[in-house]
Length: 134
Length: 266
Image (cartoon, rainbow over all chains, first blue to last red; front, side):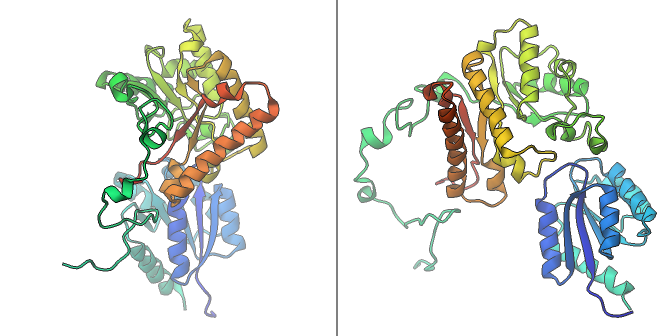
C-alpha cells in the first residue's frame, strides 16, 4: 500500500448545533498534519456516505445533546451498511462516564470529554492510524 | 521593581495606564457624561431606583425531557426563590420541527422539553404564577404565541404579562440552529411580533439582541456592542420603512443580552 495521508471526517450527528468543540479538534488535527473533512451537522446516513466517498480512516463524532447512545448506534449501523464498518470511530462532547463501557462495546475506540488536552487526541489518532498504515 | 515593559490592556485591547489621576477625568462633565440613574445618558442605570426598587430577575435556563418533568423542576426552582423562568425547548423545537419530522427523530425531548402544542406549554407551567414572574422563552415566535394563549386562557391580562422573546438574527445562525428560514423572513416575523407586542403586550420584550454567545466564541467587546447595535438599528430601519408603529414606542420593546465576561473594566 502506498503512503496516504490519514483522512478524518469530523461531524455532528443530529440537529444540535454547538460546533466550537468540533472545530477546535478539527483544527488541531489539521495542524498536526492530518487531512480533515469538516462535515458539521450531518445525519448518520450522510456521515456514512461521506466516509465512503472520501475514503476516510477515522470518523470523529461530537455530541453534546445527551442522545449519543442512539446517534452513535445509528452511525455505526450506517457505516457498516455502507461497508465502512472498519473505520476508527472517536467520540467527543458531553458523555457520561457511566456510558463509556457501552459505547466502547458498540465500537467507539476512544471518548474525549471536556478537559482533554488537544495533544492527547492528536497522539491517540497518530498512534492508532500509524499502527494500521503499512 | 520596574514594570516588565509589556503593554497592559483589557481583554479586548483597550490600553490600561499604570495609574489614573484627576487629570485623566478632568474633561468629564457630570451632567453630560454621568447624570442621575434613570436619566440620559443612563451611565448610572436605566431606572431611577435600580436594584433598590426591583432586584434583577433570578432564573436559569432549564428544562427536562418532558413538559411534566420540566414542570416539577420549575416548581422546585420557584420554591428555591427563582423570580422568573427561562425555558429551554428541546433541540427539535428550537429547529422549529414537529416531533414527527424524520429529521428530528433523535433530538425530540433532548436539551429541554418538547413544547409543540398549547397543551405542552400548559403542562410545563401548571400551577406556576406566570402573572407574577418574568419568563424568558428561547424562541423566535411559536413558544411566545403558546405562552400568550396560555395566559389568555388563565384570564391574565396580556398588558401585564412580563417576559422576553429573544427573536435575534445573529445567534441562531452562529449557533448553527437547524432548519433556519431566510433572514428576511425571520426579520419580518420578528418585527411583526414587536409591532404586536408594542400594542397588546407592552411589558413583554419581543426582542433581545444577543451578543453573549458570539462573545463566548471569540469576538471582543467592541464587536459585541457593534453586533447588538447593528441588530437594533436593522430592526428600527425595518419599522421605519413600514411606518406602522411610532418608533418611540417600538424602540422601548427592544432589549439586549451581552456578556459580562471577565474583564471588570469592560
